[in-house]
Amino acid sequence: MTLLAPHIGLLGALAMLALLAACGPMSVERAEEACYERARLAAGPRGMVAVGTGSGGPSSKVRLTISSEWLQGKDPAELYNSCVYRKSGQLPRRPLYDRPGWKG
Image (cartoon, rainbow, N blue to C red; front, side):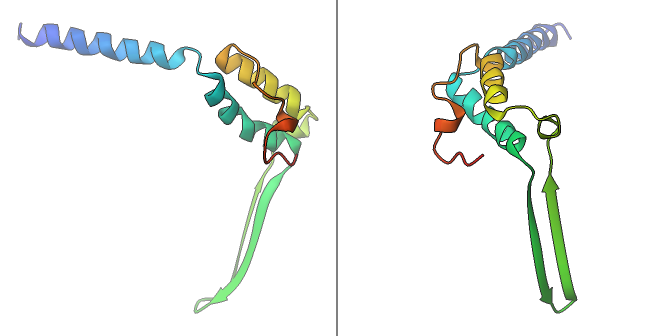
């Protein structure tokens, strides 16, 4: 029993360090990627519709994603900037509207 106690303490300390590291700021690059999808959803609803037929007969599928930020009319660029700053402590390296692939 006394041999296990130091190992449990060491494992507990390592777990606490891992948790603290996860709570710290992330790189601005990672923050930009994490916040991009949130900004994209704030620009408007996203979804897909699929219709088909098979051996089981006709089928359809609808998926619609609507963010609360879009419903509230928040500006995706402002949302993106504040999200990146909150996660990394830095402003984005480039504005949202200058990112490749941004269609808003």
